Image 1 (cartoon, helix red, strand yellow):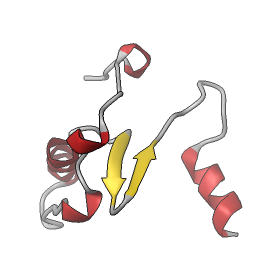
Image 2 (cartoon, helix red, strand yellow; image 1 turned 30 degrees about the horizontal axis):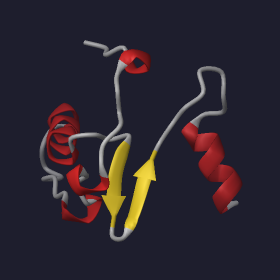
Image 3 (tube, one colour; image 1 turned 90 degrees about the vertical axis):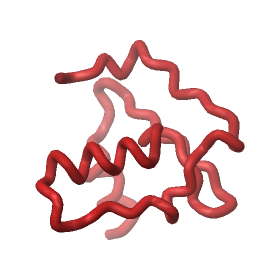
Image 4 (spheres, helix red, strand yellow; image 1 turned 90 degrees about the horizontal axis):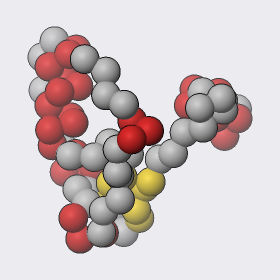
Length: 75
């Protein structure tokens, strides 16, 4: 099952967002179940809180991968 991400509305008020620091997933679960549990708890993996910061992720259709972006930041 693949969701059409481009057609979804990821807007949310800061009060509705889940703090990712409160998300806890059992590492012993199979990969698919860990992913499902993370998404269930975070509710919106593209928009969440991390302490006092709001994280909003957006991706360009033909842009660099997340991995490439992180490499530029960390290396």
